[in-house]
Length: 345
Image (tube, rainbow, N blue to C red; front, side, top):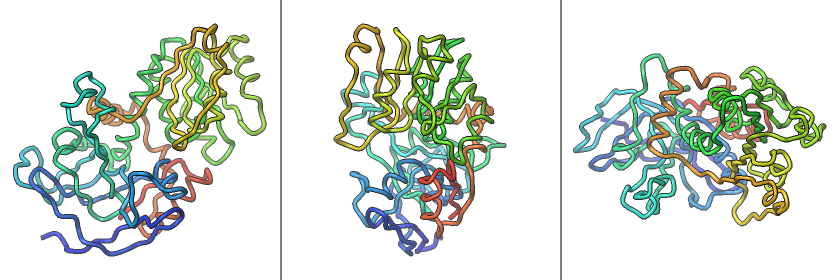
């Protein structure tokens, strides 16, 4: 029998988390219970810790990037059994709503999000079990597999960018984990130049190690002038905004060439508005695309790219910490001292 109690980190409000002993989640028919081996910190966790999250009501267990071993299976679960190494996404579409029927599963009207990875055990609901739980391939570690969910989102964004062989790609906010995954996918898709704009913190060297052609320090250099210099005055073919800051959204229009493509990937705080240069947008014949979340197809593709080594996970995980030191890990990310931190329950 699974233990009745477990350690978990409870989010109690902006800036407040605590380690607690709570009941192990019970499972229903179709669900599975996973013993978490690794949970990764991400930008959403940092935002939640800093200012809260509209989908989380304190006190609540949070965290959603994880991999582990199946500890129990519910009735009617036939594809999985106890002891299997698995990774799960944090949601799954209903497949019957307006958007799902049009192939936009990331916009599912009945989507729900599964939280609770910063704990010893997590319940994975039946809908996710049916669509977005995968066995971890041999040779892929728990740490690497846990990157599946954010990479699945990045894949959707990279596809929207439609990067062509020989393109120049600018990634604004490119030293964070999302930007570094976009960098790897841009190179995989054949980009000739990959220009990363970011802050010169401890993540800076990772972008260079992963193959960035040029690094621009947003605090000491003028990104627009530098990109123009590197592109013979035209601007980039593709700009991917990964910072989630309104000023970077606006900057993106100054970095792209006429006829180019912009993907707004980073999500600013709710209620944020931006001003767009209408001359550049209209007369520049620009394509602008917002991208959100992932689909079962991109989740499966993410696992394949990690297993094949196309996307390197190891450089994106800067440290390991026990569950009790989660707050320290979130602060490391917030201060640019880590790309991601692996939390080990």
